Image (cartoon, helix red, strand yellow):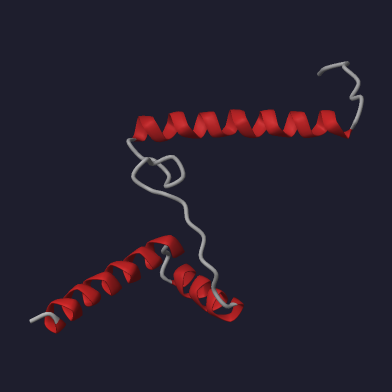
Length: 95
């Protein structure tokens, strides 16, 4: 145990940041060993923000949990479907 006296709340924040950094570094190494990357560290993913009505977000979150899926996976699937439908619609309209 350390006898070092904390000077301020700032010291607590620094300690928390260091702990998180160490935890994140460990997680990153574990992911590399297992051949798994979280989306936040995978260069094939990009983070984006969408605004949803609160009730829709709650319903989606509940459905995702019940299906043991991530909301980002559901959104990606729906965007893919929308893009495919748009492509087919555009091809039909341009014929």
